[in-house]
Length: 227
Image 1 (cartoon, one colour):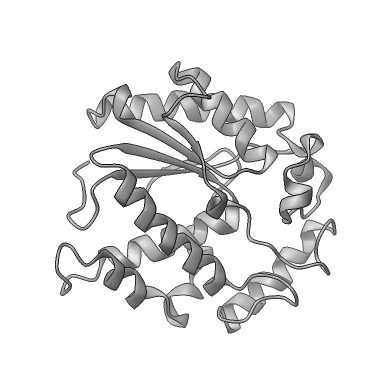
Image 2 (cartoon, one colour):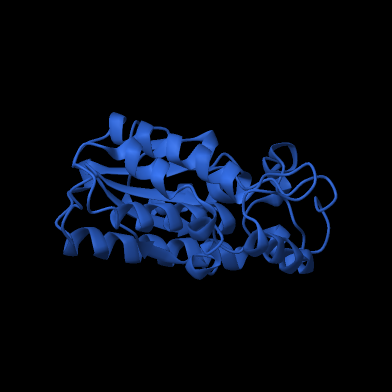
């Protein structure tokens, strides 16, 4: 897999393993609730994270990415922190070391107080709203555009901080759907110059692209090469 010309690094995404909120069928999207220790991975999720770590190790070998060039960037939520820690252990990377970095902008999309700690059956309603208008979020929550803007900022930070790395982004379903939507769309901006990362990302933060984020859905514990 060759590094795409407009980025200095290679990116993989990993949705956290099956969590206790997943098992309980709960939406846990606020920072306050998401970082609670009781909302980490379920035992099945730990197994999923271990398998994802093994698969990532194979992908690194296939892509000729040395272990010293690997970076694990993860959301501060308990379920993503737990997932990243398991993957780091599989790779034999020290979790408290410089190759593993928590990034707040990778947090879960906040769905608003009316959905928080409610049944995950409500996701269908949220995604229906997204398809109609990704620039408007659920009441008191983040829109797709809100999340895309913080992710675009984060991509700029990662591209500034790292070069020639294989970066594993450990985050959440909606966050990673939106990240893939904007990265894949940015990749198609052929007419823009090599160094215009900001211009590429700004150009794709539009409704026709953002409303399609569900096309990039991930299962719990699913690893995917993006760019």
